[in-house]
Image (tube, rainbow, N blue to C red; front, side, top):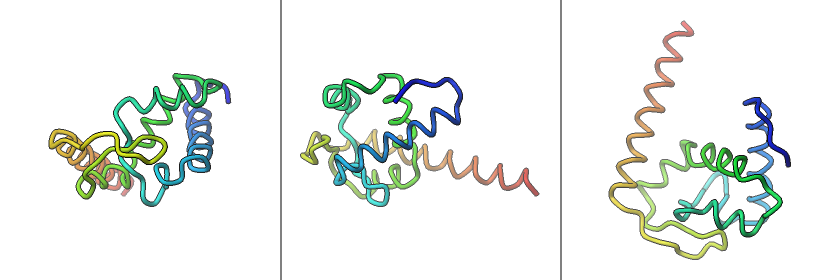
Length: 118
């Protein structure tokens, strides 16, 4: 999986990463019930998959962790998880507040987009 500069190609590449990670780590990368990832999970991924490009891993993780279903998990979950599904650390109040802020921003952008398309 190579590095591409065009956003559509990078997003397509990220989706292929999601598929790979879900096939290998279904407990953590379940698109319907994602687990909150351990801090610095990118290092775990790089260690397990040295063939993947660092910049592409980080891009894919930004997309994954920015998804609404992922951000919503912060309000319900208590822990962050390693790739193998083991507990990494507790989710902090600061983490939960950050996720809540991101969800509010996403909602505002969606509403603005909807308003501008009318």
